[in-house]
Length: 306
Image (cartoon, rainbow, N blue to C red; front, side):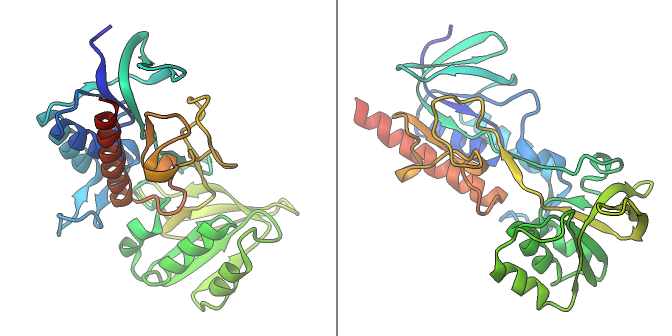
């Protein structure tokens, strides 16, 4: 077992890496448990146009590589293994990754949230090639194109409305006969002339050789099959926060970690940052901001323990 770290950061997306930049610059001995697939959801994206500092845009993996280099430059240590378990019942806390155990005076949980995908043929290989889960990120790439939004909640309505600023038409597809979205969001979407609605319908396949060219649809009542040409499919059926691996940490009804005052969890000395607690915005820049805030709070908390 290595010497005790001041901070162990679990997760290596924008929140975890930003937290690592701040803790190391504060002189705190920092370990980032990055995971085998480090870098978070931006590793799955292509062009990122809305992260400040890159007027021409930047590829998602390049942005994450730059963040990692910056954290390493300031002295953060990395373990590219998956977090398997932690003992948060006593201090110092212990964290296990790939059968190796590490100890820390404080923890920042920055494990993010995974998009719920449709899990249909043609979807996974077209992520970043017409399949997206973030209209605020990708809508400008669909100027004057016909696109589909899959989902029936508030987030699906929001995605559709954002897309109308760029797309020629937006078809909102939902597998049930009624939307779960709040009435105010439904009213907003229905008032927009660019948005069409297709209920009792689900996407069975996303077609196209190298990019999205259409979808195969199934009527959930009659089983009737049909096809629809489209240039984009936005999946808005929710997110799964990566919080189940932390027993003892309080979460809300959807599994998002409850962030108490100043990004503290219910366990003293354990902080939270990014999409694992943020069910509202889910943007790279807000995740990075939360990582900054959580690291500053961890630094203050450690100082107060002396």
